Length: 137
Image (tube, rainbow, N blue to C red):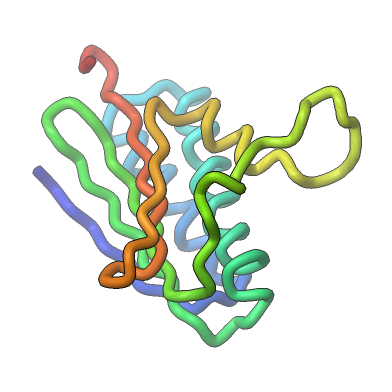
């Protein structure tokens, strides 16, 4: 198991660090170019959603990103300490509703094999995204 953790301010200018990190790590894991791009977009969307919805644009908060390469999967955890959001209320909008924005949840769920949320008091908010490695599950 290999683990990399990045702690960043919730300033959108630092999202490039997260994008570059997941892009490189997914390449190391052996994902195709298409899968690497989808994973990069999904993780970027998740981090942008933290900034926009959990921190309400406050650029002085903390986002922790942990990439863990396990035997059969890549696990990405985004952790924040903002307001609690009920995971039942996090739903993708209907794709027939043509308008800008609002596709982050759809992109995340379509790129990942598993997506779970943990907002227990001891962890803050955690979005846990799993993608099985090529030849894995």
